[in-house]
Length: 92
Image 1 (tube, rainbow, N blue to C red):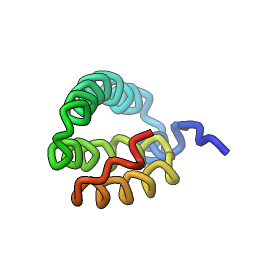
Image 2 (tube, rainbow, N blue to C red):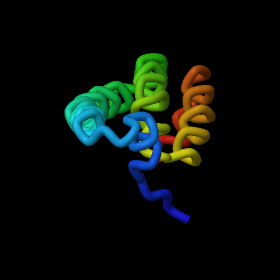
Image 3 (cartoon, helix red, strand yellow):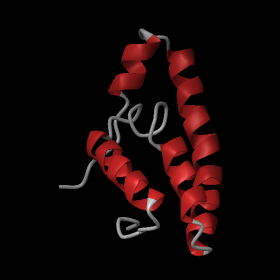
């Protein structure tokens, strides 16, 4: 089953403060496209250690966990370890 992002964790962290929720969401919206572009560039050049560092950047809060993507987070952990040894098999 495909995971669907949700805002439960962001709402919990913000304590119901809509302004704070909007700041979290804006942070993700602004940073993710840039991070994704860098990730794809590193992966395309087979710079797996650099790719691994981008996965490390994407997996912690506020990225995957803030959006409730628990399976995605666990997959990122496995992918990161594979990249450490030059294996990009989990890239898709």
